[in-house]
Length: 581
Image (cartoon, rainbow, N blue to C red; front, top):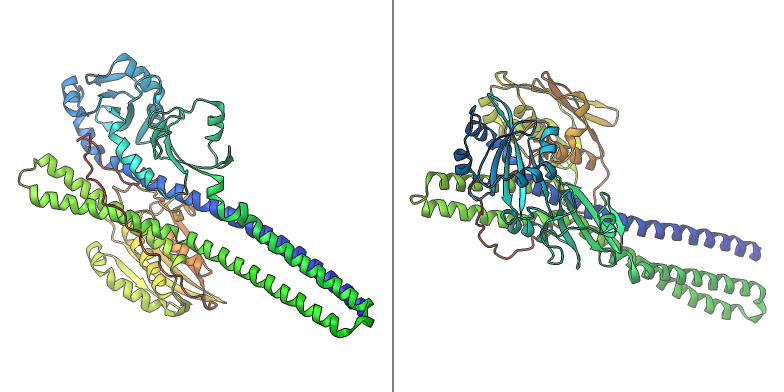
């Protein structure tokens, strides 16, 4: 009987070792995948911030179309408008030069054809940034802007020196967090560096070798001992490249950190083997004394308990490391707000102190700079709110969605009155949820319905609720501009917009926040609509939810040194902000 029990115990221990080995291997693989995901999220966030700097060119289109929409545009007008740019050129859609300023030579036109800017505009982009030519005008970048004029479409091309962007873009790349040895680069379509955070790869550096081009392939992954992640920049041939040494980036799941859990696992296996051996000896050596065998078994148990404590401590360290990574987005958002607050403070003070001595044009530039900083600050605050859905949750309580809707309508009363909206609210259920996030959810849905209204048509919004089994459904229908059915999932992406920012305000995060809140509550959100006839958003949420874990503490923002005042090298530079389709 004792031999049977010992055999069963050996089988169980072997099964436990196999299970622990598989779980440990999966945990390390998941930790590495999580680090790669964090790097990609960092690249997406940084690329979105850089994209937003150029996207507000749309708001200047009417002024540019009026300025260069005459039947004949002379060289003098272009010379006066080019400012510190190398040249301005006005082209027809087929590439013919209608007018040009001084500085636009035959060589400049030839290199413009190769830069890629015209190709992007021809594809339908409203603006485009071209390549930096390594063997020609290495200090000039072409910026193409599509114009719609009474005399047909035209393309305005501005050649501006890279020095106009170096200080700002290099500073933005330096602010991207990373491990020691990280390289943050903006590279054009010909693998030439536009901006960099490292002196070893300055602006104008060209990756010519086959090894470098292979490492800078369009995907992500490990190459030549470094990890690469890339994200294309909208309206350009450029892309953002983040690279870091594998050893530093994956330090928590490589080297000694990788092998310590396996060493503990091996110790556990050895201890289990010793325990089984001692048991075998106990069965076949009962004559040597039961007391002596029990003493040895007790010693083995103490060693096993010690090994288990080491395993639990290591598991706790891994969990804490993952929690710190989850808070990265929130910390980054906090850090990015400080320089923006200073920019706004400096522009407002300059307007107040030097306002009487500023020209009308200078005052207009200050107002534009302040509005751009205000929009960027709103974008960062929305990103921070988006990240806090899961990193800083609150306990679930009973929430009356009907009362939440009433409070939200009270907050929106002024906008409802101004738009002449007609809002009807049916009976809404009570569910177990995060009260603040339910308020954010209802507010964003109603605000979205009011915002995307048809011109000249008073909004009609219908809010209805129902309970089906264990699910509560809340739908918000409107008679607004609607959308085409193929976009019913795309509208929930972060920064996704189906209309330009000039047409409808916002940052493109509202519906993404709604989806994240619904997912956190174990539910989902579905959108249906028809272009020009309205849209309907339906949220399905569980009526009850298991108790939440205690909320993680909100990370403290890391202060940054005072930024130096920025002097724009080109007084005609446009404001930029993020706009997507």
